[in-house]
Image (tube, rainbow, N blue to C red):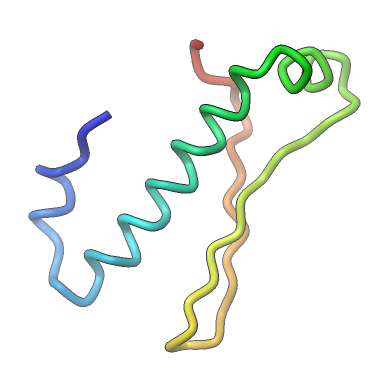
Length: 71
């Protein structure tokens, strides 16, 4: 998945933060491809999320992917 064009449009200060958020979303998508994870999600026994911490601002953001992506 390429996000180069999207990231190149951002100011440098936001580039790294956006890249990290995109990476977390990609990792959540990949995690859903594991059979055990996808089955547990389908049964309602598992909910996954990601967390991104910004050390400069000392703020953490929870990233939810509410809809499964096609795997």
